[in-house]
Image 1 (tube, rainbow, N blue to C red):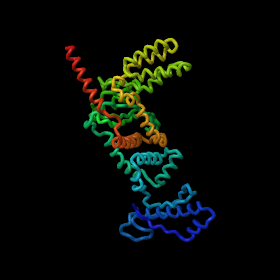
Image 2: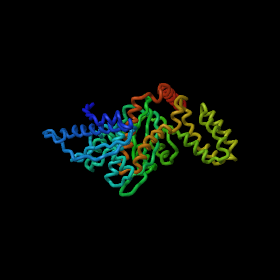
Image 3: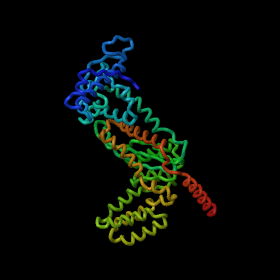
Image 4: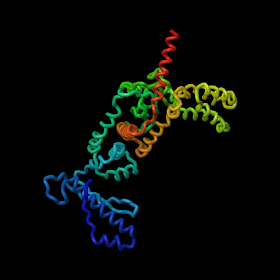
Length: 408
């Protein structure tokens, strides 16, 4: 850690200890200290003190500009050194984690392209000042983009992923001078060791079957294998793509979305009394019990809530697919809630941007966020203990082979 020599004059000490307000004295001290630190950092970056003749000098000062900062002890004025080359400090950029780097880059691109709002301009000025150019942004992108792209395109052959959850979110991207809505397809898997892992993301023109097919083909090209169960909502294009690219894999319809679909079709007066009955079906200990409860509910409500019962009957098998698994795995695999919480983290940063300046910026920021989450999952606790599932899976396959032999 760098060490700085700070000077405090007698006038400042008098203000600190004998002034009318203790806070004003502390603010003055803080202002003096921070300004000296800024000058010391400028000297470090330039390799020379002010007016110093040195063969190691990396550039020259060009005055300073004021920046007001509000602190707990009051407002202070910083005199931020301005360097003649006008470059954004690479050292400052390196201190940010990858997701923050991607966010700053997106903001800088917006300012350079002249499409930023006043708020974005203010944020960018606070983070990195006003002195940066297109070439600076380009150089910073060259540092970050290969890291995110290498992670997003890594090979998945080393391990199997029995459970895969997929979902999409819509973001706004500026393309050809127009703002367009684009679908960001994201998938994560639970591997056979029980850890969650982000499998990748792709930016598509929409959430169509074609876009999802491209996403799944890409995952398979990267050697995604061993998938037994896929969880998603009922978006028609997504479901068709799953059935095309993962034939024989069980599809679990998200129960949260399923419940919402049923209640949306239920008369308002019946929603409160119907909800616990629907919950009992989805929480049943096995498929046989769930079907018995289904028949009872349909018989009681088929005239009072015909549309809702139609949705319930048509979606029952897909929404209860998870009941064939051992009990300990059902709760975390019956919805896409885990992935939607991940999407919310992305949304939190995306709201700052509002409209991405280009596709590359969207992939960079979202990819960096997912990459960091992936690293947290890898170093954290197991999401599921897969011992029971792997044993159940082998027994299930053995039973299937026995049935085939007997039929033959």
